[in-house]
Length: 157
Image (cartoon, rainbow, N blue to C red):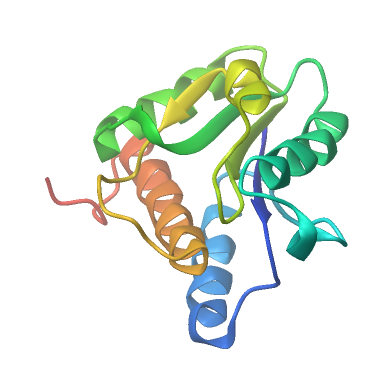
């Protein structure tokens, strides 16, 4: 199984880049990992808060494969523990999932078409975070999940 992290927006800012690279390297000890930064539409400044997610959805849905397992990060999704995340990753790895895709939406969230396509909708927190920090938090939590699966010492419940 390959883990993919997709995020709408700009490249990683320098203040999170080192952390993301570190956790990505750690995750790659367990699973192949690929990052996909999806650029915002070219005319994004002229789009409304409703139109922008719809336009982003076209790119996202056009890039997903039929059998990709999509985890959409969404503020209205289910909050889970680190152990439950590990269970989700392990279950996908033990199943027929070839690509486990974690998707971070754009500034106005994910379009309903993307949320309907998602296999699981996950909320990191009731707090609102900048997308750059969500990338860092997600990469750390995926590394933590890997160590939980292997019963390694990193995670202390």
